[in-house]
Image (cartoon, rainbow, N blue to C red):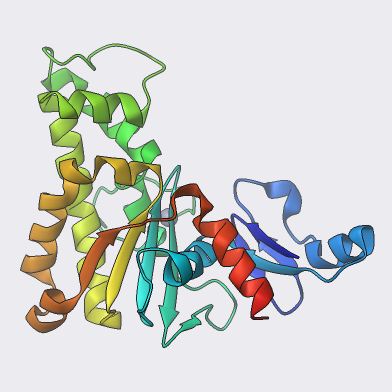
Length: 248
Ligand SMILES: [Zn+2]
């Protein structure tokens, strides 16, 4: 049995180290509890790491061995596979791509305690916040009012050419592209797979993302890296969890 958790996990000990969105799990020995309750072995993994493995096994990353997976959801999750192996880091906290700083000066505060993290510009939550912030500049926008606006509403407005929505996805694409250029220069991956619900808006941010990569990353790795939408959808983590259980 394989379980994925949205937070930092200690794979060896089967412990949830820190799960900001499920704080009741912090410090919990989840593997031990599950093994005892269900009487079968269990392994634990971070959800974004599992999604990266899922995309490499059954999704956009098939046939590749060095991939970076970025999941644009409520937050921004990251998974790094190098030479076919998940890179978890010395403490299991590696690949926190959402907390790469892309705007140190006057950057928006992030839940992690830092400022200007990629996640506060490239995630569903960020899209809604940036849309609200930009409203005064776009009194003509269909998004100018409404408290319960979602990132999907912004996407739909963008498809119809709404200037406010297009500005938000342009900003998101620029920041995401800066983050990807850093990853390309550091890791030289074969492929970057972008998943999560926000990837549906690919056509609205793709151009701006690629432009930043072209301007900022080294020319050779930038030309060779494939930046593609994920293919496993919401199942990426599940599929990765299955692979990890099979190949434990
Ligand atoms: Zn952060």
